[in-house]
Image 1: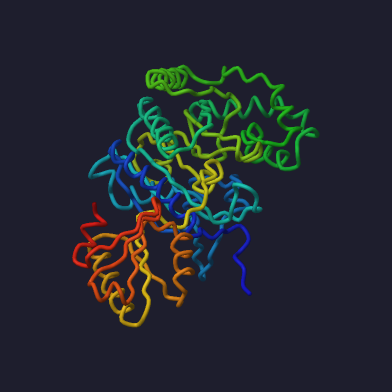
Image 2 (image 1 turned 90 degrees about the horizontal axis):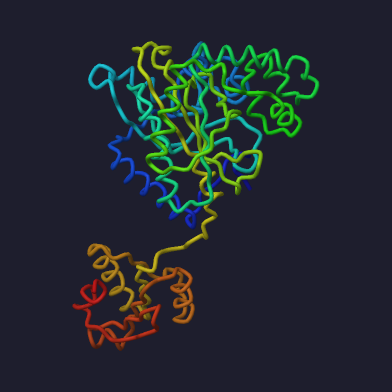
Length: 413
């Protein structure tokens, strides 16, 4: 028997109602904020991610699924932002409307060691705003993520924010960290010893206990942040305060992708555990559009991991809604009538199903109960003779005879 690939999961029928709830809530909210949907392909030129994420990024170094075709190397997308910016430029959106607000959903792929909240195929729900440096846009994106979580029924999360400053500020921070950590390399985990050489900012983000102790001893005063970036972050916080959004400023918060500058943020939840506690994250990437061949314009975005939202919400599996009408027929003539009723109900917009396994009346009633049907419609010889059906309300237990011609009106009441 074949089994699913490690690091992937089946989204079963009992979970689909939860996925739809989150997707429908987010689509409605995106519409309220005037965001438009975009659907880039799952596969991209691998050089796109090498350029946008940085050659030293762990995603590029270890985690990309690559497909080679002669001289061409493609990658299953590991994240959405680079694809959105590529689509923005390739389709000349910068020339028709330089300021755009976009959202997307879909599968992402990373060759990671499977663990709770970290899969090889996972799904992102995200947004990107391209064309503005305004700090109020940062606040809007954070408030948008906050509202999606709230209206999606997810509670108990926290919002952490920080500023990385501009590229020059990040270089200064990297230089300061190099000096501070050089004599403490032996106390860092093996992965952070590699990060020290390739991407030292990621040391700040390590969840290893020994690394966290080293990082907590550092004095990150924010002195490396220039005045312009400090003012930008101040205005972001003021906008969030005016929106009454609770947040924590975390000077150790960095993002693992090279394109982030200025504002970065995370939505974290205790249900995911201490090692992988982020429901989603995002930030500014003011240089990425230009780096990929476009104009010099600001941009900011975020993405939630759908599977991580599922862990945080812990929904109970459902089989069906109580709007379902389940038809039970007894005898060949009743089966023919049942087929006609199924069609009539569905055409009228009423969810309907029937027994296709030849169950007894008792067994079919048990199946209707398992499906959480709202009503059962019973057809036998007595009902056929009267041109009627027996209708049972599964919630109240009330049972009555209804003329066949009146059944749709009765169910719509």
